Image 1 (tube, helix red, strand yellow):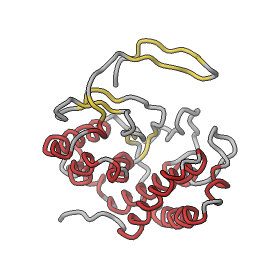
Image 2: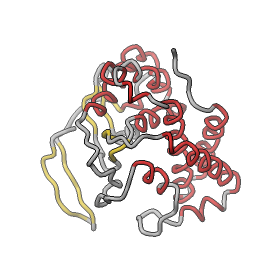
Image 3: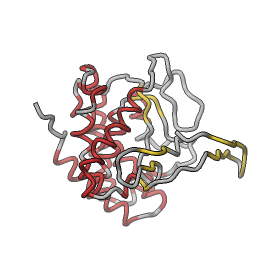
Length: 248
């Protein structure tokens, strides 16, 4: 995380200025760099995993004050409900107006609620938005150089960040070629923690569906119907595919 050199208030919110770093966006890694990009991405995910955790830490809710009653499972469930209090609301009505996307959302919602009990109450550091120009890596894709935009950070299951990378991989061929699902299972600090892999395929599947479903709501709310259709199409594939396999 780059050093923050200045913070302040602006436009009814806040800002932070950090030291400048250089590199290429993680999502711009090329498929022909997969031999180094795969281990690099696993090392980034592993670094997040190794941040000290405590069962007493609150899950958190983006930039809002932490709630003592919010568990990881309840965070997952509440994100699928249109809450009138957050800045983004009324997305459910916008999504309902798109009948096919709404049908897919309801299918994802039902499966997430079936799978959520398999999701442990972990307190790993979850960045929550590792793509979209938020991570810089070296030009040769050998190492991360900076991670920005921590506003979506929560404490939960490290596999959520893995699912973030795998779900969006059809949009980014270099991430798909890097194969984060396989490489995180080879990262020593994660691989050697037996508790980390209990029901891992179901948890990962739950998070992919959750990420896709919430972005159906977002794209309907902002009126980006091209993106809505693309997310809906990929979600259909994920629903049909089911959990990713784990090599034995």
